[in-house]
Image (cartoon, rainbow, N blue to C red; front, side, top):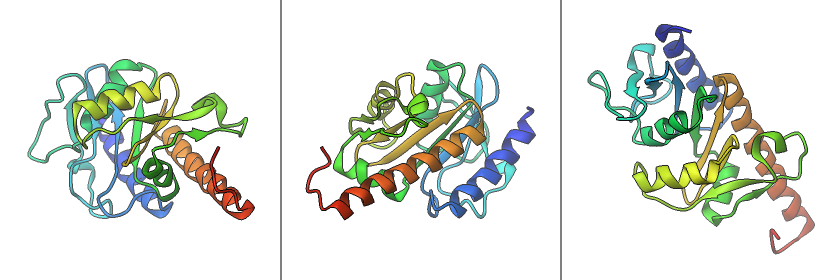
Length: 196
C-alpha cells in the first residue's frame, strides 16, 4: 500500500470511529505503518470531520521526528513504540471510548470471558499504569500492558488497540468497547457491588 492510500484510509477510519461513537471531536488518534522506518499518524488538534489525507503526518518510528508543518498526535510515542516492538502490527488506534474509559477511570484490567476475544486480548485486557499524556512513561507502561496482545486499557486515559491491518484494529476497538459495555451492564443489572 502506498503513502497516498494510507492517508486516505486514515481519513476514512477517523470518520468511521466518529460514527461508531468511539471518538469525539479531536480526542483519540490513529496511525498506520508505512514501512520499516516510517508511520503515518493523525495530526494533533484537528477534528476528524475536517481531516484531509494531506493533513496526516509522516513520522519516524524510532526517532519520532516528523515531516511538514502540522504536529503529529502527542501520543506518537505509543504508536512508534508498538511498531518498533511488534513487526506484525501495521495499525494502531487510541480512543477514549465510553465503556473502556469506565475501566480506565477505575484503573482496572478487563476480565475477558468471551472465547472469541481471548486470542486477541488474552484472559484479561491489560491495564497500563498511569503516565502523563504524551510521556515516555506512558509509552513504556502501554507497551508493558500490551505485551503480545492486541489491546490494553490506559489508566485514567482510554484504550489502545493494534492490528495487522487498520480494519482489524478498528474491529478490535469496536469489539472491546461493546464487550466492556456488556460486562458493566450485566453487573449493574445483577446488583453486584464489586467487579471481582
